[in-house]
Length: 345
Ligand code: GDP
Ligand code: MG
Image 1 (spheres, rainbow, N blue to C red):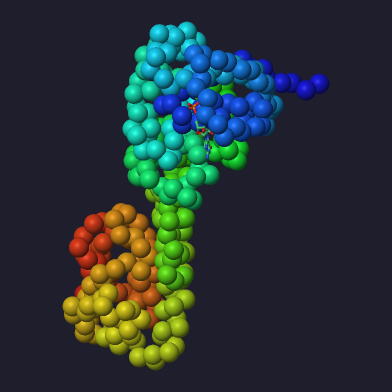
Image 2: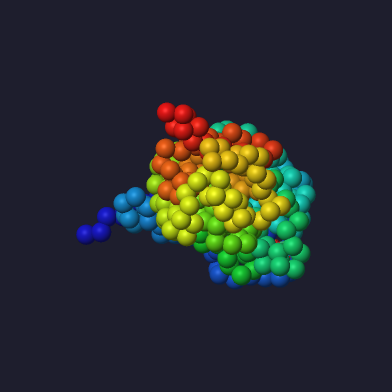
């Protein structure tokens, strides 16, 4: 026999007037959308059963949702006590095409927590994605990002018109209310969504930049744990190139390899500070991997590529020093390769 967990939740739909709360509810319950705007008179609620799976056990859950829709109008303020009382979760909606509706969100959350009497899980919804193509993104995405990072809340963009993400919004809220999704998981999801967003915004100019995007995403997701893996891979990459350079040049003096190395760069991005058979000091003004303002430790891991390149092409006793790096916010990169100590032996 199938074992099903059953729940009953009260959900409230809040946010400024005309952002699409009633439309979201209608879409969710009836699968329909109406173009004409009707004021929501006072408080209405509708019920629907939804099924959702516990992500860790795949166990089936069913929740009977009672969804309360409030009018955004101030004149119904006296009704709000009943409206908020006993709510288990909320969908807080703003309109992606009207910046003022996003500005009002903190007030709505404040009122909700005050009148419910405690913090309850909620999903922040940016509605009317179907209009974005026409209207464009008028709300600064960084502002939204900052808000969700600070509040650690789930953020979903929907369209009541097309139905995009409407089901998902209610199911995600169910997971939060049933406590099957923990705050850490929300954080993870926020990071994942941000990485995806950043990827969407960037167009790599070449394979190295694309590799850099992958490296940054990997580091953001796994932090320090990612570093040894990045190191090993970039080390191998450096060795592979270093071997080719060694075979090609036939002369393994640091001065020769250093000059050859520099030629592979766009001249405006690099400057040789010192070049001899014992020392090679080079500055870079652009990180080929795009690691600007990430961290020194990430730069160190990625620089395994150049370190191993020189160790392979010149001499494995070479000393390698990252003096400055754009990754740590320095004004340029400066790397020093030296054979001095060994030369004196
Ligand atoms: P409420 O005041 O928050 O309940 O907002 P309504 O659901 O009544 O919607 C206000 C207006 O926005 C109506 O004209 C809806 O047709 C329109 N609307 C709601 N959601 C969407 C959407 O996702 N896309 C578009 N294009 N219009 C929407
Ligand atoms: Mg309404």
